Image 1 (cartoon, rainbow, N blue to C red):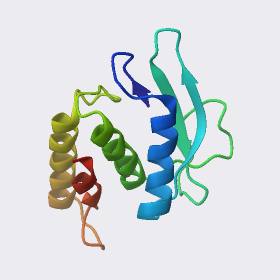
Image 2 (spheres, helix red, strand yellow):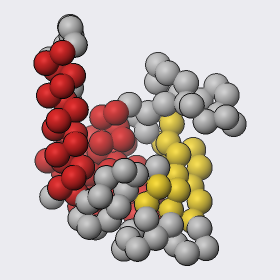
Image 3 (cartoon, one colour):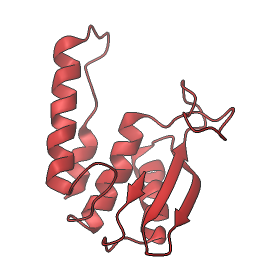
Length: 127
């Protein structure tokens, strides 16, 4: 995940967002790697200790991907700290909320599911 250099967010904010997702929302997400560029952009990768799927990063053999919901809690926490940040492909907090709601609606509408649908409860924490 990349955070644009013009954001107010720091690497400490990223660490705290992941810790919040893990400790307050019981999400299985951990920082695998975090780098800050010379101009201030932050790039970080997260993993799961108990995930189902492998991470698609070349040097991540044996590591498992964090869930969509776990990432949602991290990103929501970051947008709470800076609503105008550009995080990943999300232009700002409102764009993040819109995109997550749309994705959840599409998945819930078109996929046969045995559960109650996508969990987007993390959106409540973006404010």
